[in-house]
Image (tube, rainbow, N blue to C red; front, side):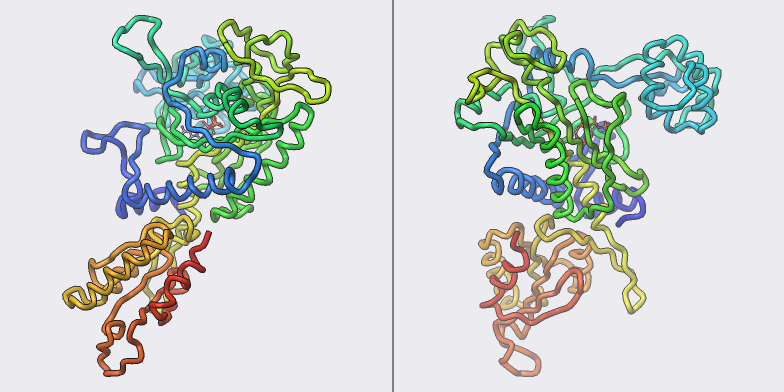
Length: 506
Ligand code: ATP
């Protein structure tokens, strides 16, 4: 794995995986653009998820709901009231921080002093933040007295009382800018699934348990976006809402934990690089009965969340349904005066209507990309003393599957052969096949090692039947080089498709 985040950032920029957003105008904080190789890797990751979570199961349906969202959706979901992070300003440096992030960066002594001043003996960060938000004036004095420093310059700050900051992007919809005509960019893809529950049920006649999967963008106005694509303001999620009968939810929650860990393993993230955090009660989101966070061991950052698997109980469907009072909803929900749909199912035996519980495995595409890149990144010392950087990506995730390299760029017969071969291989549907004619062969191998291309296929004089030795035996054969072993094999062109298909099958 990579040792630092910096070496990944540098590789990503140099080779065209990821660039900072709006770069030529100085950058737009919290946004990144996926370059030529990044878009392939990301698409491959999403396709792997869709294949495993939708196509290979018989209890799933897909959805692609809109990003622009009616404000009532996010009113009844609880996001308007509670989807916020605690914010605090340093009056001296004018810098703004997420309170929990700021506290985490203090020395233990300072943190204890703040907690002590807030009347807490044990330092649980979540409990401390909650107390500080409840008593903001006292919190400001506590921070100032304890000498909380600004991580940007290490100097003591003059801290304002903390306040909750809603992370949703509100946006005007339509030409009239009055107080009513606004909506939100969705902060999670999940709500699109809940509000379509009845549509999907009517269209598919599904019975419990079943799930709905969705991949798409989500937006959060993070107070301090940071750590490359780990914490950004625009990101992508791969979410499943899996609807089950109340009472079976805890068992399904465990099952999904195992399914998801196995999936990450298949993407090249070994089980031992993930810690499963059983999120403490005081840290749970407003909708959650219990949550497991999958924490990947990132370089530089340490263990951080790549996926949350939440038991959202009947909170969401219960919040968005009409006729709440007749449905014996277990979660505490707001009274809904606007919904036009009953988001419930009927018990086939008792004929009673009830609201399903939902298990939600919610993974970040960008954090997944970062984890996969970190894990795949390898620096090797070769026998000749040289250093080689190789991305040991699972072949199905590799941005380029095969590079076809003509050994001589100015020999028409060779380049024409290579181009024809490239087109034939491309037609196999393996993913991107790349015609590589820049630099010498050694450089080409090095470049493709660095971006994780599993196979390099070289077309040379032997291939076209013009070997230096004059022997025609190698006509219509090519050299295939394996990224991981660096072994080269001579393979007949007539067998190349089968050779590659077998090794790249997924
Ligand atoms: P965090 O605690 O790190 O802010 P979260 O617990 O709020 O994350 P969830 O609401 O559970 O995150 O979202 C599910 C997934 O979406 C996360 O596991 C993560 O992979 C991804 N995600 C959430 N916020 C961001 C972000 N700002 N940038 C990139 N990915 C994100």
